Image 1 (cartoon, rainbow, N blue to C red):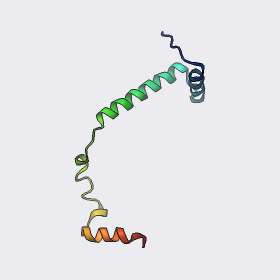
Image 2: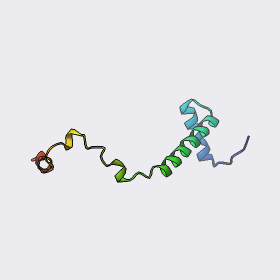
Image 3: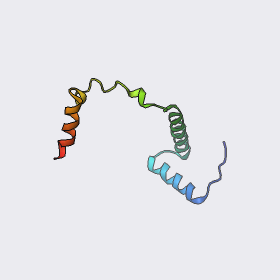
Length: 79
């Protein structure tokens, strides 16, 4: 067990959130650390490049046909 010193405002917010979620403060802190760790890991692993998506839309019906006709249709969509 470890004791963490928090100011009153933060402690009250954490207690309120734990009560709202119907979980203990310990469970809330565990969930928060898991969420934070997951976000940090996904941010470092999410170095996706535009080239990673190349070819994903090649079979999309939206991009079938003459590219000039598609461009003109999009331009004239709101007129």
